[in-house]
Amino acid sequence: MTVELPDEAIAYHYQSLLMPVEEEWSAAAELRACHFLNPGRLKDLLPRLLQCRSQVAAEREMQPRDAAFIDLPQLTLDTYRRKGEASDLGRVLELAARLCEQVDRVVFLGAAGMTLGPRALFEALLSRYHNELPPQTRLGVPRIYFEGDSSDNDALQNLLDLLQISCVDPEQRQERWAVVALDKSGDTLEPALALRIFRREAAEYYGLRSERLTELFAAVTGDDGKLRQLFRAHGHDEANILSVPVKIGSPLSVFTAIGLLPAAVMGLDVRALLLGAAAMTKRFLEEPFERNPVLQFAAVNYLMTQECHKPLRVLSVWSKKLEALGWWYDQLLASSLGKQGQGPTSVTMVAPRDLSVRGQQHQDGPRDRLINNLFVKEPKATPILVQMADHNEDELNQYNRKGLPDIQSATLAAVNRAYYDAARPTADLVLPVLSEHTMGQLMQMLMLATVVEGRLMGVNPYGQPGVEVYKRHRREFLKK
Image (cartoon, helix red, strand yellow):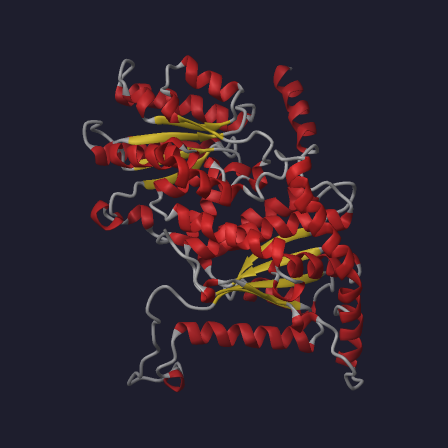
């Protein structure tokens, strides 16, 4: 069992966006007084913030299905210790192992709320070129694909074409593929359409009477609903149908089987992921504000939006591997807090890649945004160093023996200084390393902070009633 290490705790450094106390007057100081957060307001908010924490904690008893995500990581681990293979996590690990043994490609089908969490884990913790690596380098981990989140005809056809070209002999494991449907009910049109299309494709490839039509299709869904009924009608073994609590909303489902099965298929340490999430829940419930990144993030971002008039929340990720994590947070924030005419707008950018595109606007554009930098302190790989060269026309010899992490850190410091001088508020969310444990902490922190912020705003962070409107109209248009 992976054990939490003290130096693996993530931290939120927000002090740089607080209004400096007794700063000498200057034009920049005047701007900071207008656009930075008054420390007194943060102090004034603390009693209400702690009250919201108590409310969120109490909701686990009052509305256990809505707020079940809070205790789910620890509960999943505890049940696994007691019941082993008979537990939910045991079933997840068993199904993942069976799929990995049978196929070299797995397609996960689901709407964005279902697949963005698994995609974030995939991009953060596996090689950026995982699907291009030879099988022996991937150590039995299949190639991973995500579909079913749109009705984009050509995008889906591209994946079908890839499977048709690269898979010609179903007797070879390296040329077999499986499909996992991620949908709480089966009511979402796009993944349901994709599933029907892949069933047809599988029938043509494996044969109409092949047992692989049931062995290589799996579902993660609610205890009842169209998807479960469909799988039963097709004669699937119950071992290929995993359950997820229906009322854990899709933005909060990453630590249910919705996220855990893909993570296990990817070969990730699922228990370390859950341990990180459970550790963050413990910090949220027990630690004071000074050591509680959930309360810090919720309070600072809430005040910057509501009182400093910064409705645009930029998540600036300083790693390409975290861009999908940013997309996941975008949908988490939008679907949870975009209600009753309220809610911040989250935008993800990758730094320093996007600085040449968005840096100008952040520096000199509208003063309507808070920038949260998401930074990984230590790279997983050995730092790549700048070396001396005979031809120094590029003038890089001056950086001899500097590593790319040094350059990344210097760039972050320079950007923060430039924004501070221009009275553009920034804060840093720091991950010591990029691992299953820190990703578990990070995702649980962002989910908890979003729920707390919703309670501060006075909106219910659970549920997505707004999305049902366009679905109703679409059914009307399709029937016409």
